[in-house]
Length: 252
Image (cartoon, rainbow, N blue to C red; front, side, top):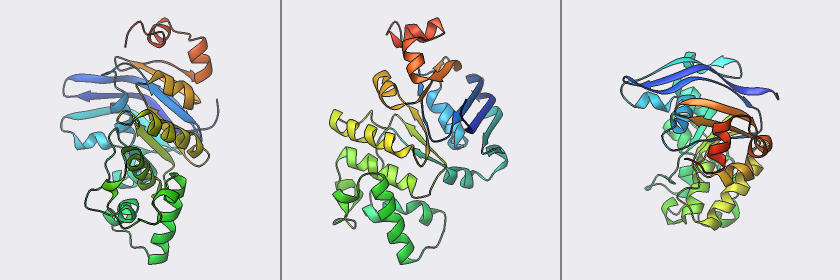
């Protein structure tokens, strides 16, 4: 197995009395794309929300087990620091509506009270938009509101906003489910380019997308990790019958 940047050990999550994740063990390889697939309600989104501690914003959630980033237990770290190191992009593009494209990109710094000089801001904005393959489309309109962009551009802006904090890991929660096929294709190309500089965890209900962009795939079913391995092997010769049934559309 390649070097793991993120390690999940015996991890369970509960909403009140309802157990949503059951003893998950998973090592996420560095600078690779790992897809998390499985039918609706199987715990995919809960898992990635636990990875950057977003689940703590919901009442009655408790977790057990351990998640380590670069050998540091994320539950022993300030959640604000965790969310800087582990960025997240959601299903529906959500640029801050009252902010310009420029301010959207550096919003993380402003929200965290991190002071930057004008030169530092300009550099971070340009670098982040270039990494999100959006710079050429918006460089002459940086001070217009982010909401004037198309859906696909808005999602790339949200990716730029996450990248601006220079995270180690980027979590993408069904990032193309609200986009048309052309915009989806743009975002998929971008995801593949980004793995050189950041480790990516991609939750997707789109099996074709997992096959196209990911290096590794984890299959979750009713809160359990059923199978994990290189995407090509899992899609051509799954070891578990349930994985095979899900991939061939018998359920899901």
